[in-house]
Each structure stands twice: as structure tokens, then as C-alpha cells.
Image (cartoon, rainbow, N blue to C red; front, top):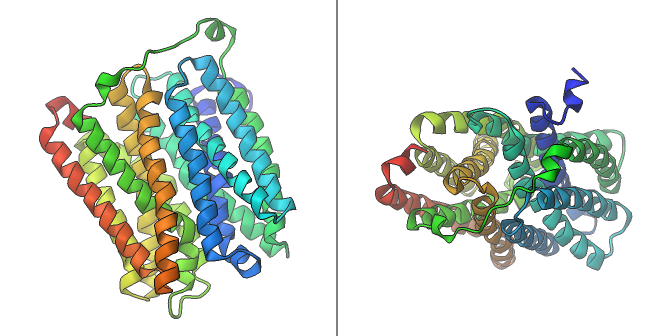
Length: 396
């Protein structure tokens, strides 16, 4: 088994490497920040600066997603994937050894770029390398790495705190873990000599950006907004509710657990019922999850909020990127990159308006109202997209 997992052309090894890339790029470089936010807020961070850090992280992510659209050949994709992975490792190290605000801002923006290389370019490499007729289920397993990214980073953080460690120690442990995971991922997600000699490149095709595709991209922007507010503040949102102080960490753990199988379940449903139909259902459940903390302080309903969030946003990433890859044909990274750019714009804007509303109203409710409204608007756009879709597009 060990030998097979070191075989660059083995499907299981490719999927494992892809999942580890997501744990490093999405987990260590992004979600670990959310896990550690309550303890960092108790120490030196303010909610406002945390929101600014989240936005700068997504500015880096957005720039990486736009950059990924224009990476034409497979050799260059592999090169930037490797660079991105190592950027994720080294920027995490800085969070462990300094509290200089300028360094943190630079670190988060560079980490965001690295995360885009890990997610967008890494997923495109995985999709290219997999050798099977239907890649939908395999890509569902790959994107389950987003759920694993939350859970693994959260468990590592819990281990450090259980050992009387600090949030600085947690960043160091995450750095060490990310370094070894990166070595495996960049080894597997590359090509043998024969593939390297054949430079696979594709021209940029504007015709794929039809009205239908543009509506999907707008809806994915709304999902980016819906994703980012909880992704930045969820543990603190739960802790701020009457009687729920201390439940934020548990809620975040449930987000990761719910996220692991969600992509596989949603993508299997999409194969049977059509991607856009399933996306609409998932977005509605995400809407419910976002609005719950504004309506009740019931512990079980707020834990359900975390489950609905984790169980939908991970699946939505997989669903959108998978359908984007199918619509784009031979060059999946183009539409994947365009979609992720829209998602990234939502990720940049979300923390900024949230911080402004949190500062003004002194609670999270109004930030969540606006976020839920944007997600609901995204559902309306998708319903319209269904009306103008071709029969073939409705079957995707």
C-alpha cells in the first residue's frame, strides 16, 4: 500500500495528495485562523483587525484566483502550485514568531495567494491527472479535503491547548505539519518525464462566458459572501450569544465534521438530479444556517447552524467548481479561476461590511442579516439561470 501511495499515477495517491494540499492551503492558511480567533482575541487581536486580516487574506486569494485563469500550460501550473504550497507553510511560521501587525498583514495576503494556488491550480492538476471515465465522484472526495482542513487544524489546535500550549505554539505545530504534507503533495501532483515533454496548453476562450455561466458566477459570489462571515467569526458569534459562551469551539468542530462527507453527498446528488438543482437546495440550507444565530440562543439550534454551514459551503465549492470544469471543457482552470475570482470578491467584501456593522450595532445580527439576504439573492439568480439553460446544461 505504501508503494502505491508513492506512485504519482495512482488515483488514490493523487486524491490523497489533493486532500493534503487543501488541508495546507485552505486549512492551515485560512481556517486555522478561525479556530484560533477566540484565543487571539483574548490576547492581542481586536475584532476590527481580525476582520481586516481576513479581508487581506482574501485579497491575496483573489489575486491568486485571477492569476490562475491565465496559467496556460501544465508545467507552469505545477510550478506555481509548488510555490503556493511553500508560501502557505512559511507565512504560517511568521504568525508563530511575531505579533508585528505589518508582518501579519503581509503574511495573510501572501498566504491567500498560496491558498488559491493550492485550491484552484491544485484541483485543476488533480482533475487532469485522475485516470477514470467519470471524475465527478473522485472530485467529490478531493473537495472533502476542505472539511478535513477545518477538522485537522482544529484537532491540532485542541491538542496544543490540551498540552498547555498557546496560540503561538499552535501556529508552530501547524507549520511543521504543513511542511511535511506539502512535500508529499508536490511530489505526487507533478508529472513524469514523458508528460513534461508534452506541454499541454489551451487558448483563452471567451465564448464559454454565456449569460447562463455569468449567472452561475454571480451566484458563486453570493456563496462567497455566505461562506466568509461564518468562516471569519463563527466561534465568536456563538460565544457572544447568551448562555453559549464556550460553545463556539464545539460548533466549529462540527463545521469540519459536517464538511467532510458533504461534498461527496452533494456531488452524488448532483449527478442524479442536476448540479444547479442541488446547488439551490444547498444554498437555501446555508441561508437557514446563517440566520439561526439571529433568531435564537438555543444551544442545539446553534450547533445545527454550524452543521448546516459546514454541510453546505464545502459541497457548494465542489459543486460550482465541478460544474465550471465541465462547462469549460478542455481547460477547466479558466472557468474555475473565474468562479473563484467572484467567490474571492465576496470573501474580501464580507469581513469589511461585517466589521462596520459589528462596530456600529455592537453585535453580529445585522452582519448576518445582510449576509443571509445576499445568499437568498444568489438563489433567485440561479432560479433565473435554470429558465435560460439548455437541456444539456440542466443535466450537468
